Amino acid sequence: MDDSREHLARLWLQCAPMAAWNRLDALKEQRGGAMGVWESFTPQYYELLGEETFAYLADLRASRCSRVWQALEGLKAFPVFFGEEGYPEPLLHIQNPPDVLFVRGSLPKDFARSIAMVGSRRATRYGSSQARRIAKGLAEKGVCVVSGLARGIDAASHQGALDGGGPTVAVLGSGLGRMYPAENKELAQRILDEGGAIVSELAPDAQPLPYHFPARNRIISGLSSAVLLIEAQLKSGTHTTIEYAQAQRKEVFALPGNVDAPGSELPLMLLKDGAYLCTGPEDVLLQMGWQEQRAEQPSFLPEEPEMDENDPNYPILKALALEEKTLEELIAETGRTAGELGAQLTMLEISGKVERRAGRSYALVR
Image 1 (cartoon, rainbow, N blue to C red):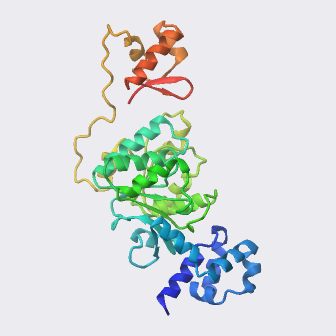
Image 2 (image 1 turned 60 degrees about the vertical axis):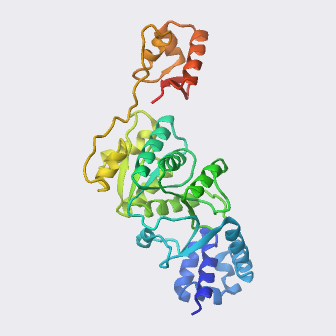
Image 3 (image 1 turned 180 degrees about the vertical axis):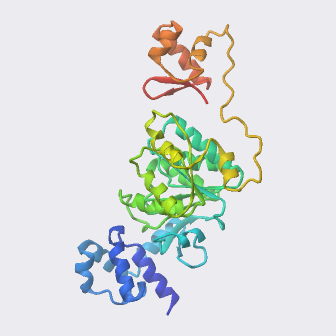
């Protein structure tokens, strides 16, 4: 059989709306593969596939997928086919691997040292800063960080990997031509510019529909040797990534957080159930055998700001030494007026010693 025709048929079916994939898989089974569906594609499939999917595939078939090829060319992207050169080896072993993966950039040749870092889109400052710190430390040791380019923990993880000069791979829940969220377009370009990759199993023009994201999570975990959860609530899309990781027999790590913080629900549950504790990159490197012995691990807490009792800001820094405080709590502890505190806190923010958090709270910069 002509390989180019077979590739065309496989690409054609891969670009179908995800909602029709199960029905198309059944057709491939009946017809002996994608080429069989291509050659037998007639109005008899109208009722099975539904009007929208049938019309989409009919139009794409008539043009021999010309708009897909044009879109890929414009994006400087390319398809890799299951079982062929360039296809990520780890995905060969997961349940329901994508038959075709669309790629921008450069995929690592070896995913043996790779970790998925996932978590909430509504990340706290703590979660984002820890994700970035840990990803940076892992990247500095040559570990590939895989995530989903979503806002929150995903974005912080990619940024940390880039800060560490290591490779990072983003797996989208939309097509390569529909970068989502738009606010991360610059981050996506940085990933490409610095030698990473952005991938999707969806047609280049596919929208970021809600049901795309749970499905893409099997690829995020599938590309990785381990998964690190930073923060997420129990009922969150992130939970599906953990479930896929467990089904794929991947090691699972979790970062602890405050026991009363919503984003600590899932990490603490996983830790109770036997997930590995992660407080820094050293924990992952040692447990995964990516470091022969434990090096002296520096404290993951930075030095506290110097506190000179004669410093006008001393009462504020002392009040924040153990935990964040609201403006009202600082007024009560320091005896300052709201106006005085506001001015001092502004100067401390500018100097990088204090940061403002949600709910009119303030904390020392960690």
